Length: 161
Image (tube, rainbow, N blue to C red; front, side, top):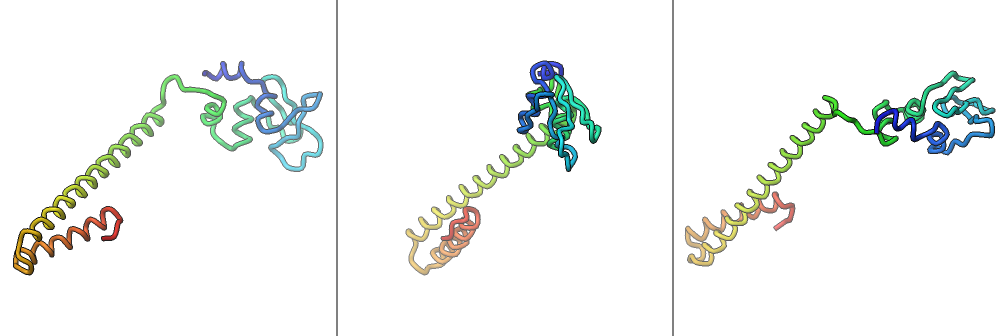
């Protein structure tokens, strides 16, 4: 939705009601933008507002910006606004997020491959130990490699061996 479409859809009273601010019969509410307001001093008009005490005034977007202390773009999106053409900043954020996602994917694939390779070493060492004479040179070598691979596997998976 565009800015004009949003202004046509929402009145100032609708936006104030989102924050629990209901106008009296004359259309006044207590101003949420300055402290110590004993009497209702903020007048809600159909498309805008004005506070006779602190001088705050604006439209529905300004009201949300001041109420939540956010920039216009976030207030626009809070009311259902969508950008027709993405800005450079939004495209840059999307590009950076995609790059981070790809990097995490590569890191996960690398970690998975390392775990797979480690598991293959472990099974090979166990098979070698079963086939060789206990305490022979080959058996001792396979035992040492197995212990190292089990240590690496526990570091990779977080599961102690």
